[in-house]
Length: 319
Image: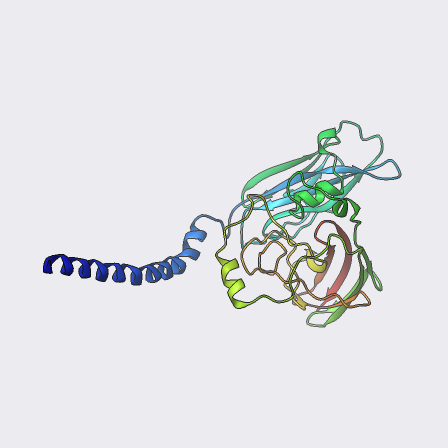
């Protein structure tokens, strides 16, 4: 009987020791997690793949071919001038494509208008970045026709194949730049961009203004709810460098327009994102400074979660 009791107590002690080891093991795994994730992803040196997203008709009979890209890197943001490594064919090589490429997946980044008689021709975006030549083929094939529901679904605002009266009623935000679309500035000089943002309030934002520490902790370790990209629906305006050779500082820091799905990222695709407050009058001010001279194109994107609107400002920066 003594041996039995002793064995039982020994088993209880072993269990307690095992219970103590579990938090230590979890802590060790969490410390190693960034290295494990890094080992499975690219930070620098990977290629960028242009993407043809689809096309949509215009009221005047012309068509817009829609393009984006996939930068396989999580950190590297290559800059590739218009030319042998960044061009369209046939015809004009410059079709308004970016020269500055943000990380990861960027959908519906820009559109190229083609004439009503475009027919079955192809427009090819050619990129050669980090030694890898890639192409995207724009075409008016019926399978690539895009509407608002496709955009909302592709960007993660809706589940695949899901729609509702609310989502079908959503209209594109209205974004109006205040002042000239071409500006001048000196290096280190602060300029202010003011844009008026207006929206129909759809899709309705389901973001909570605050979250408890316990809820944040649970969200950090919660498994993804669906295999496709998931986006938080909320209105925001984000300014980014579309073209330009130099570091640009935006104040306040801008919401990411690329699909940063990491927990806590300042991104609608990050599960803990809280959208910036929109002033009641819709006027949003952003200050910008440049660290070197040159010509910059700044890209402003208004996004309500499902649909988007763009504006651009060219800034000529002198020493």
